[in-house]
Image 1: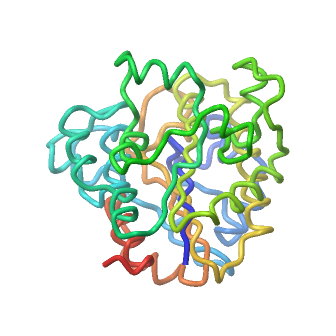
Image 2 (image 1 turned 120 degrees about the horizontal axis):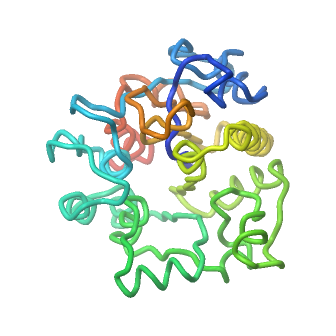
Length: 304
């Protein structure tokens, strides 16, 4: 049993309106098939298909206001209703109280301390490492959880060697925006296969994607449609090499945003959780909020 958790920032389940919702406008046959042929929207509901369980999941967790990345990501990785414990949603980066919770307990930390292996399989550019090390910027909740577990943030060298991946999977951004002309370049299908194969090195692997949230805040709409179609192709490649008997592949998000480009704000919409693997129904049973993800992963890994 091993688990690959694919985190896609800022994706909620909104109106099935192709004028404002990239999920509605994009052609994504792989994602539709995993939800019984349904588009992902606020009308999809809980779905069980041949390969997947699709579970609309609550990111608000009883706390007034729009969910934010810092506390929602911490809830995903601690199994604690962090907004309720702190009394507020906060982000994008974790505040001091959220960081303290992540340092006390988180999924990476529990897996590693149990003697199993875990990794955040993203590569991060030198400038981000530099800014973190000199205190100019904070780690995200995801990065902070991995750091608290003693895990490295992968570097450009890891990207080049194939031991980590670009956050948009293909490596195109490293070539076009970061100046690494020789960065590995994958088609979306190849990137999905690569992600699964890389995840097999660990009992628990986490892949973090954030460009959906950037487009949710800034647009453009056409870029959102293209990105969601890329994610569909990545998942197609992943499914081609994923053996349902090997564990669970889970995709989830922290809050809504990308699903409504009529504004640049977060939403209070439910977010999608997609579970693939033979034990998908067992994992999905009783899953209603982001705080349920970690306890169920620990159960699947026989750590509770």
